[in-house]
Structures are given as structure tokens and as C-alpha cells.
Image 1 (cartoon, one colour):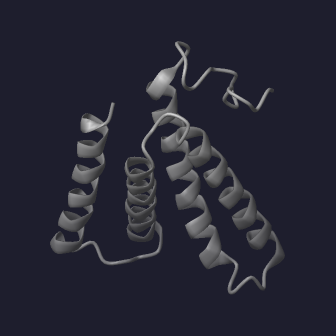
Image 2 (tube, one colour):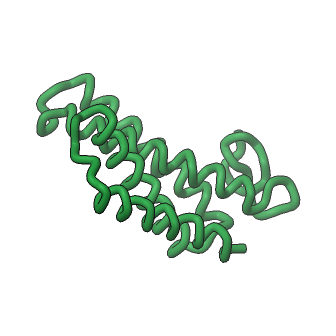
Amino acid sequence: MVWGTMSAAGAEINGAKGGTGVAWLWLFLAGLFEVAWAVGLKATEGWTRLLPSLFTLATMALSFLFLSLALRALPIGTAYAVWTGIGAVGTALYGIAFLGEPRDAARLACLLLIVAGIVGLKLVTR
């Protein structure tokens, strides 16, 4: 793999092979890994458990790697907002589904507003 102008999968980010479509894929993956490290961070119990700590560090690194790949073609403000939005919504939904966190209407409405912002940024970013 060449790291200059090539992505991890070998598709050129800023050229004809991939463009912003590939960058949005990298950004989505970065967001998923952000959810993974946020969930993992809770499991580290203050970095006192080795395996959850290693998992969390690995998923942090992958999240930042994919974010950095996305930033080759996307504006920083858009990419960062979408990355944190995916992480926030995904982590909140994980908490609701698996940790018994509240799922009241106001909380779900707020999550939908974040999703609307993510979709809006995707639609207006070229």
C-alpha cells in the first residue's frame, strides 16, 4: 500500500478513482470505529482492564486513520461534524439497546436531529 495519494484500499481519493464517494465511506467507517472505542472505553473501567484497553486503543487508532483518509477529500468542518455525529448517535443507540439507557421520546427526537444534521451535511457537501 502506498500512503502518498492512495487510500487504504488503493483507490485514489482526490483523483478520478473514488473521489468524495470513497471519502464518505472512510468517514462512515471512522464513525463506526468511534462508536466501538466509546463502548470499549466504558469497558476499560478507567484503563484498569487490559483487553478492553487494547481494544479501545486499536479502535481509536482505526477511527483516526479512517477520518484522516476522509479528510483528503472532505472539508474538515463537515468531516468532523459527521464523524462525531455518527459516534454520538451510534453510542447512544448502543446504550439504549444494550445498557438499558432511557429511550424516551425527547431523547430519540434529539438523536433524530443529529441524524438530520449528518444527512444535511452530506447533501450540501461536494
